[in-house]
Image (cartoon, rainbow, N blue to C red):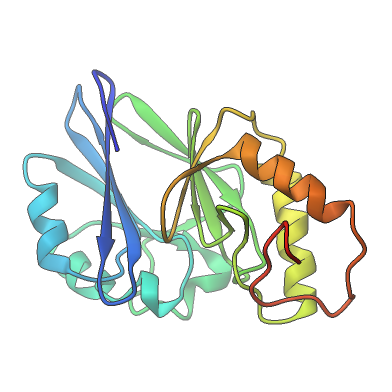
Length: 210
């Protein structure tokens, strides 16, 4: 996805659910970070070769993002980092508990932690300069799926307070599917927020058609 003199980012769309795993590597030091562990552990290990893995970060505790977490942790001996509210539902106990505003360094870079509850209570996004790894909090054309109206209101609050305040030029790399630009999502959200909606709205919501 990105490969320049400073940073290299690979997106692996893994089976069985088409979930994205991201490998972020500092090209100066070759230190790397892995975001989410949905499946295809052997493929992920192969892609990590030549790098020095530092952390295994989890955006949230759903099984389609954690299917290979236990095997990758055992193989790589990496610290697993997740948000406190989702920790009890993970297949392994986290080594690092992340909170809003924390940051993790690797090589010459830092990933900043944004706690964005809604899809799950402990959902996280990770910000690397002008790149946002949004997990299942934000996708092209809408937010992540929510289980009930309270969770939907919560994810909207997370987006308004933490995500939509970022620059329009921020690139968004979600937990499923292709990347988008934050400016595009802000415009579509403006259409959504300008309409009235049922107080019971939740589930799979699209900005323009909901």
